[in-house]
Length: 110
Image (cartoon, rainbow, N blue to C red):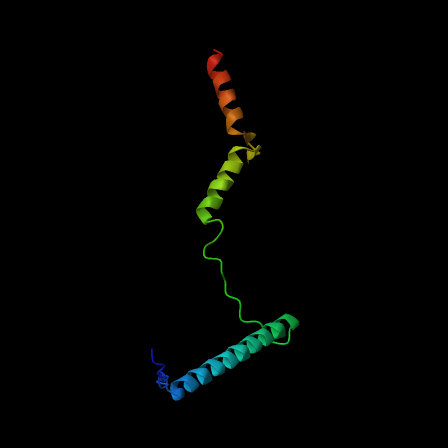
């Protein structure tokens, strides 16, 4: 066996694209750090009350109780309560269960 020196391969990687990629990466990292610092500073400014908060919007999409629901609730309350219908004529309203019992008693007794 003969020891013949094997030459190394020539470098086929061009430096310019590598340097450009490195510059882009470094600039991106610096821009990201700057953005984080600016946003954190803005948040701190809001927390300390130095900056005006953004306008609040009305997040209520619909009323909690509609007019019809309020009317139904008022009617149900009226049916469960005592009160005067006509004080001069001595007419009252009573809860519906009491009214049914009185009606049945009147119908059962001849």
